[in-house]
Structure formats: structure tokens, C-alpha cells
Image 1 (cartoon, rainbow, N blue to C red):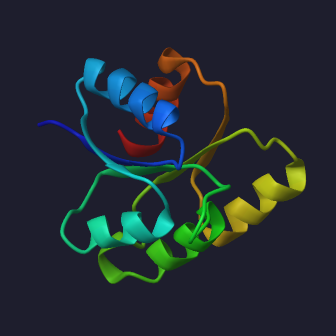
Image 2: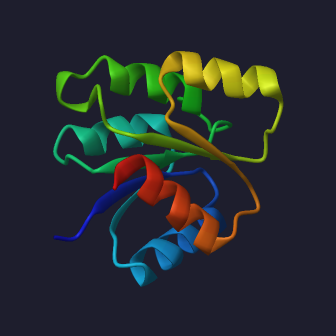
Length: 121
């Protein structure tokens, strides 16, 4: 069974890198440009995990986590934050909102896949 990941980032380059790394690892990938587009995707799809940036227009990563956790079918969906931010208070805020894990950009594909496997199987 192919695992499905929703990858959310306002950077086209990062979305392309995520798509490449995840598809090479055997994942099916859906991409979104920001939190609002991700929520639109979640109305029609049920990914096994979500990877999201924090700093995005329209709806940032914190808002996305909080919104996802309010959706019945997605309350337990693992959410991995992928961001340039590394401040402990931001990690704590993301955890409190419901994030499952945290990776700092730039990312290594192998570490990303390992973290994804740890949180989503």
C-alpha cells in the first residue's frame, strides 16, 4: 500500500524537492502552497501524514495545525513541521498546537524519510 503525504510549503523549490524525495521513497504526494490550500485538499483527501512549513501567506503552519486538529477525520493525522525556524519556543508552540515532529531546512531526504516513517509508519 502506497503511503500518501500532503506537503505544504509556499516555496515552489521546496515543494519540488519534497515531491522528488517522497516519490523516490515510494510515497504518493499531494502539494499545497499554503495552509488554506492544504485545508481545501483535506476536504477531498485523507493523507497518512502532512509535512508543513510554518511561515506561509494566508494561513501559516500554526494555523494549519490547529485547523487540522479540529477536523474529525484528521485529529490524529501526523504533522511534521519542515521549517527554517529552530527556536525552542516555536517548537513548543507547534507541539502544543498538535505537531508530531520537527525538521529544520535545508533537509536531507534520508532524514526526512526516516522522520516520516517514525511518525506515520
